[in-house]
Image (cartoon, rainbow, N blue to C red):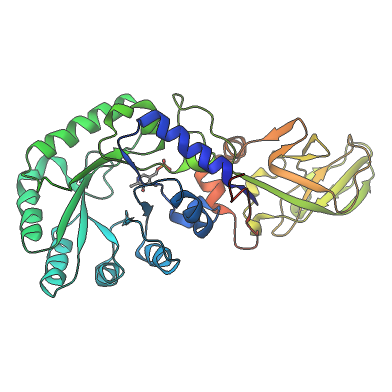
Length: 365
Ligand SMILES: *Cc1c(COP(=O)(O)O)cnc(C)c1O
């Protein structure tokens, strides 16, 4: 996987241009920065004037701290009870969805630790957060935790359909405002946030104090109203074997492709064990010498076969592109996702540790 740092910077700049200069940016680097490599992504993004970084888990946040990242790190999934203390110790900002977590943070603050949290408001996502209709109940609980020394520094909600139906964002924003109006917020230093990548393009007016882009930074499309991102990740492998197939020859497990005439097949050293989705078998594409060629037969764990009958002079060692550009031909991560019946997020995060991440343009020229 080649990862283009200048494309990552440019995509961040496109988000910035949409939401304007005021809100702080919190790039999401969870799941190894959507598969492209968290350490390098954090380093590149941190040089771009961001407010902080977003992760999903406490261990991801601790990994960022171990790398020496000094910016605020916010853990966006609810932390399991047993991880709250180590998160506070590491100086991570926790997001809180439950009164029990407020109690834990209060106890740690009373013990002299610097506990800081953002409170999640559930406005329709349904998987985390305090219910927006019950702010009169949890608002005072959060305020008490704050008064006891656990610093309440943010309120946010998460959008469920900004990429598919922007009108839902208006309703979620209305619910969020209804909850905020019912609170007596500590005021000074309180940060309000709601937007993911798709939201940053379809409803930039709801940017509030912080914006949390993810997929767009890494080159995935973010709804009809978003511009096309620059490609960040390209995935390539090499031809390792060639075969002249005779009519009737079959290829791969289950013998699901049969040569209809004389065909030429190239075996490429990438399979589902590397994260190439197995359901691209007999339906996906690759690029060889600037030409688009079909994947034939089932994708194996370690290799994939493509039909290169129409491409001249293919040799062992040739580079085959599964995501990216080769000459005039191109395959985007969104095309792969659609063919595989999933979303770009799952394709990118699915590439395994066997694929080296090779960063390019890390230093601005
Ligand atoms: C992953 C995540 C985001 C980023 O979403 P994208 O659709 O990738 O832009 C923003 N906020 C939260 C809470 C998230 O978990």
